[in-house]
Image 1 (cartoon, rainbow, N blue to C red):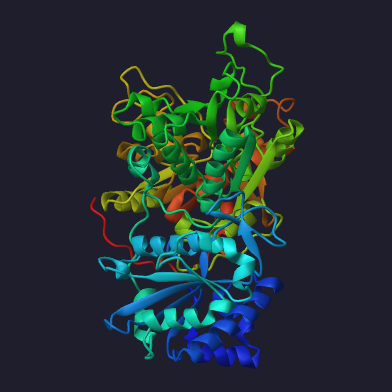
Image 2 (cartoon, rainbow, N blue to C red):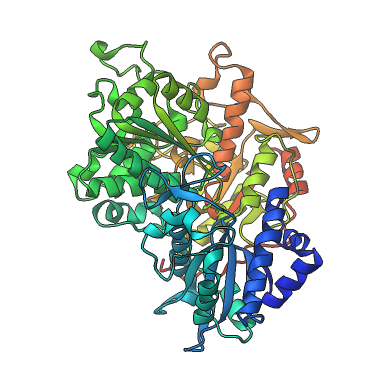
Length: 631
């Protein structure tokens, strides 16, 4: 369930009896730390007593409420009726056990908290973002004048010890209360909630339709030209604010610093990148976005730079900065930074620029006053890629630069299903855990296909209904050039079924789009995508063909590098078996985490199909009710 649910009176009864933490942990269904249980017991007991004292014992309390389409949970959502309008009324409450906090270098959006490492997001900003996100995505909140309000409650703090928090102007979605302002907090609750039952309002919230998430590329051009179209939450917003703050600091104090943002697939790295790029471009700052992916950069140029040469020129490649002016940019945003290579030199590099001794990471750090790196270490899929938090941080510290590291823990792809991402990591042996049985969590639809024909038919129906769908595979089949008549060779052959790979070059072949646009052009359906064209993109439904390079033997998945047709895998001198094993597993990690609503898996190997069938036994399918979108 998306939350632990009870009345305010019930919350207080569980707290007094000492069973509250057990009840929440049982309902929420994820691994709960001792610190988290202690936090529930302390903070929720205070809130329960406050609600009782406010005469709001029948208000419905949703604890650890999971935001739609994300794995992010907010502390408490209160549901009831408005005392003046009698309409459904909702209050977000973020509970903080802080007893002391101060602004970070005079920022009104970043704060320092006692015993915490590095800056945190101002709690008013945090809760305000929650309100905005819920308003954007929940149908039940649409078209309402004041759909939801929010407050941060620092129930251990007195005003003088958190005085800096009040410097930021509050709104009805971002109020701050301390224990010294408990009376004001009770009045605030009574202003928005009537004493009666909130059960019906909670029912409507929990069964609300959900608006489909905004596709990054659909809003990319508007993001750069106008204003932010995406609501960043928690660590996403923290990373965004840290970069903007570092820009101001570099200008005012001539201090160069590095920001590293690490997160899994769908954690919002590219949304952060585009949001920062748009804000700085609108401020007339010198800023560029760079990747090591031709597909990703070309697609961003097409969509984000649409109609503007100036915007197109904001997007480059990691090897574009070999002779760049030192600190010539205010900010260089290195997206997909796990694809950083040892050197920028390749076979196309002019002789005059062939300095193999200079690391690519040095070129990127030197190019801007604030270099920003966004990466996922489990997405290294090509030999020679070496971008990692440790490598980048260590190099920056060698240069005596300040380094801020932000870890993104939440999931905004795969229906916000953290359980699915963990299932994939366990299946592929990438997190030290063991494979587990997928029973379904209601947020993501994982299925097995009996054949490639069945997979394609399912995906074609989704595509015809106006949803995006693609089929991808491990690199286990040859990849031919187009025929003289400009048709593609159906290289991916499984029994009597065959389809071509995506186009090799950026040039379209017949109706098939160039490789950079396979994931975004509707005509990409019908070709099988490889990891290099899928990486960095997302679509609603993903079909993944697991080739003979990854098979189940004796109850576990093993890799067979000799089955790979990737030329980089031929030489054991250049690529060890250990490295090849990790790259193959990472490849399937990328492919299996492109889907936003669901994934279908098919293996070419009979024993592997049986193995997967033993692990995929879903009792719950996709339960989210999406609002209809036009085809």
